[in-house]
Amino acid sequence: MAASSRSAQYNHLAKVLKKHYKPVLPAPDRPVLETLLFGCCLENARYEAAEEAFAALVHNFFDFNEVRVSSVRELSEAIPRLPDPAAAATRVKRILQEVFEATYSFDLEDIRKQNLGPAVERLEKLGGTTKFSVAYVVQATLGGHAIAIDSGTLQALYVADLVSDEDVGAGIVPGLERAIPKNKGGEFGSMLHQLGADFTANPYAPALHEILLEINPDAKSRLPKRRAAKAAEPATDLKRAPGKSEAAAVASEGQTVSGEPATPPGSQRKRKADAEKPEKLEKPAKSPKKKGVETPPPDGVEPAAPVEPAPPAGSQKKKTAASKPPAARKGPKEPSLAEPAEKEAGVSGLPKRKPR
Image (tube, rainbow, N blue to C red; front, top):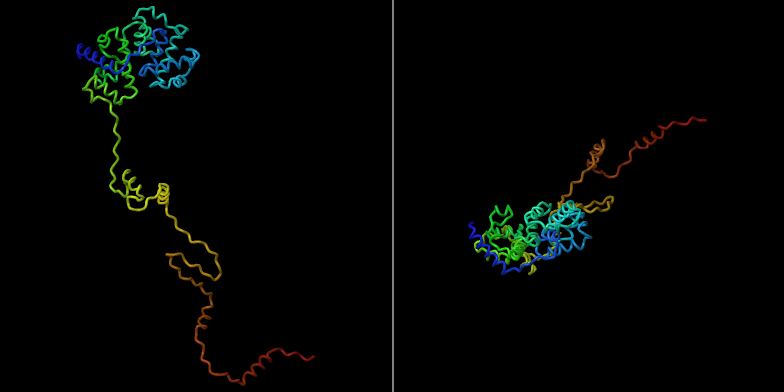
């Protein structure tokens, strides 16, 4: 892209930002170290959230030394409104540790006496600093011309087709400081940061999309879009899988889709649970057994034929003899002459006593 076209685009960007945002100027009497720590909180965040986070670090802890020795988790819990509290807490903790190890104090005011080049190099060597925080200190405190750019601002400019993929990877916006004059650098940087903070907070906001389209009307296809949820498969059988609206309409009339009376949800779950249970054979109720009384079989079961016990040996002959029909009776039996003789014989069969 030519330099003239870049300047024209950046000037148009400044006009659009001025219509939607108001510049927020830094505190003039804030020390260098505090300005650097505030820049760590301001990265990708709105000004209100950054001011609240910095106030929490100052008032919720005894001094910066307590902040230095506190854990990242404790610091993150003190600054919850930031987009990434853990990242901001890590930056603050590392900067305080680097400054304390170098000077055994928490003071960077001697940087004001150095030239801008050496001062920037010293800030960049501190652990925990980023391009955004260094540029913010240069613009707000050291009197230099540097527009602070964070990842949210780069993403917004990328959607507006003002930077390329290589620029996003390098974290720079080529030609921005040359296109924007130094006396307007603070106001422009503040409004541009607010655009990036809104993009970080909600890249799908309709108001944000209107601003991006006003910057570049051809960026409509580059706007971030939400992923559409997968459509549910249509139900083929209304009786088996009715739609929510249809089921609700039918249930309001007191009937189901199949025409049966509607049942409350609790009974449907119970009926479904009963249907899933394996069927169990019902056992016949036990009744007291009485001798000589037979228990009727359950319904649907044929009665078993009674099993006769096997007769003992020798009883078959008696049974056969008993099965013969009795002989026909022939009147009264006539006494025979042999009976008294048999009686006498039976009596006479006894041993006779010998006479004494």
